[in-house]
Image 1 (cartoon, helix red, strand yellow):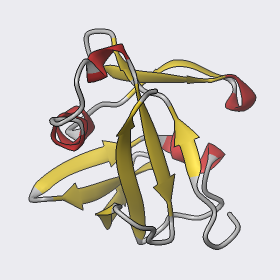
Image 2 (cartoon, helix red, strand yellow):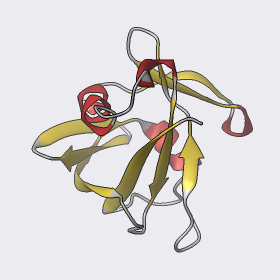
Image 3 (cartoon, helix red, strand yellow):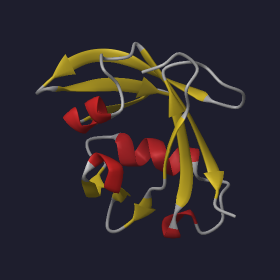
Image 4 (cartoon, helix red, strand yellow):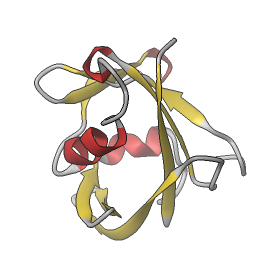
Length: 112
């Protein structure tokens, strides 16, 4: 990943938070194991977020972002901590990051 680059996906709710990314070959890729609760917190002020929102993320801090801190690797994925919550990001994260970031900076925005 290039320093200071910000990537964007548009999660939506289908029984759990999922996202599509045609360029990465992902369709209805689910967030699991604690990450849905993190997303619930990130979108609590976004009306109708379940229909979709913009999630910006980077391994570099950017204005308005919140930090997910790396905890440990397990089952080819990685555990991260956010506001006392722990969540597991599956190996699909390596479609966006070449190496495991020690921090992932995230920001949720309303779709326009």
